[in-house]
Image 1 (tube, rainbow, N blue to C red):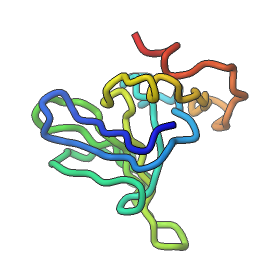
Image 2 (image 1 turned 90 degrees about the horizontal axis):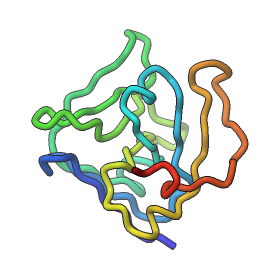
Image 3 (image 1 turned 180 degrees about the horizontal axis):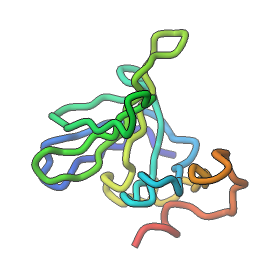
Image 4 (image 1 turned 90 degrees about the vertical axis):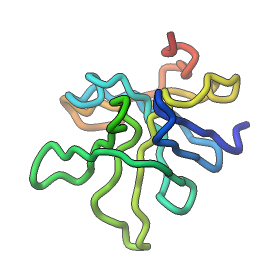
Length: 135
């Protein structure tokens, strides 16, 4: 069981911390995620997610619902950040789990596949975990 996961970009300038145990790590096949190879864990900014450092935000469209945030120094995709808050005033963030150290706890997180390219829906779990996707 994981209580805290920390991740950092290659140069260490942008860092995140996730408090708790993620339900799963999402592997998405949308045009943005498949290009970056990110595995996402999700939380809420200031609740179970904290972030330090500078990033450069990229929104794909003018009506975007989130930004992809990169380290301006090393270029690593660090997180995605919702542009709106929910009814409770929380902002959702996706953290690129590939920026965490490959501990046994991280490697055991189950993979959730998401079809962001076609159907835009969760796919059934296939029993894979981060260990199966981490090279």
